[in-house]
Length: 95
Image 1 (tube, one colour):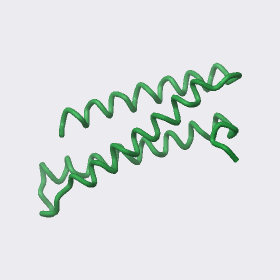
Image 2 (cartoon, rainbow, N blue to C red):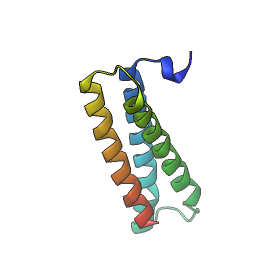
Image 3 (spheres, rainbow, N blue to C red):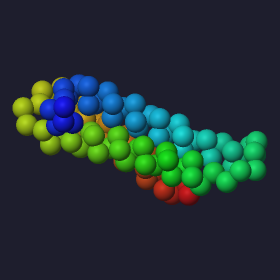
């Protein structure tokens, strides 16, 4: 089954899961920078977090572009896009 054929609610749920996972993974290097627990490089971890956020953002944009989507789901997609875009800008500024 193609991603475009899936239910919009399910796609938004996956977008949320990818986005929140990316945000949590990007917070790990910030916490390690302020309270050094390990000496390992955290750049790959930060890259994976940003990749997950971009993936969640792309799913939310795909839901917005679908035809015949309920107004409630479009509003949720707009909020998801806004939150993930602000999180991405924040993590790009911190790097």
